[in-house]
Amino acid sequence: MARKFNRSEKLVIASHNQGKVREIRALLEPLHIEVIGASELDLEEPEETGQTFIENAELKASLAAKTANLPALSDDSGFAVLALGGAPGIYSARWAGPDKDFSHAMERVSTALLASGSTNRSCEFICALTLAWPDGHCESFEGRISGEVSWPPRGDRGFGYDAIFTPLGHSQTFGEMDPAEKHAMSHRAIAFNQLLEACFTP
Ligand code: IMP
Image (cartoon, rainbow, N blue to C red; front, side):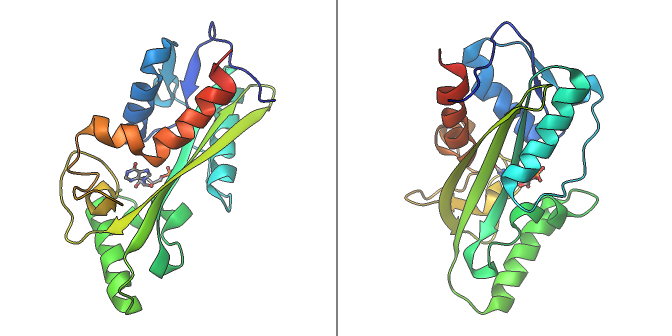
């Protein structure tokens, strides 16, 4: 059985990515838990040396929990294109380069797809969420959503690769969608619902 979060404690969001922090805050809001952002605590960002989303989420949450001496929630996520063997995958943030320029990262996906010669546009977003405690205990969950790569990018309502991701059964990209519609179906929401069920329900 998963360890439960004690709701009288504060929860650190172990991420410096403002897009993710915004989405995680929105998901946590109904729980009325006191939330602190990593940047408010000046927490350092560990090097992401894991080979999977869950390994990287555990690295980030454990370091934040130990440093802040509070439970910490981290998100490691990415965009995986089938015809590219799952790239950029765990390297999704790194494809944007040191300037974190996601127009550049999206161009790179399009160029690599053209070079692959494949007409398969299947892709997915993957999100691993880890809740870690200062004693080192971790609970981790993974959510995925399938879609197709759209080119050129459309919409500026999201972040990262949202403007080139059209979820299956929809015509708008995540970048065009109302944020509430994205939050209701996203890889992050799927992982978050598992986390809620396991660690936040009595
Ligand atoms: P990391 O988890 O900090 O390594 O970064 C993952 C990267 O994947 C982010 O910087 C985004 O570019 C991308 N990503 C993860 N989730 C989403 C999403 O919901 N929309 C768009 N891009 C995402």
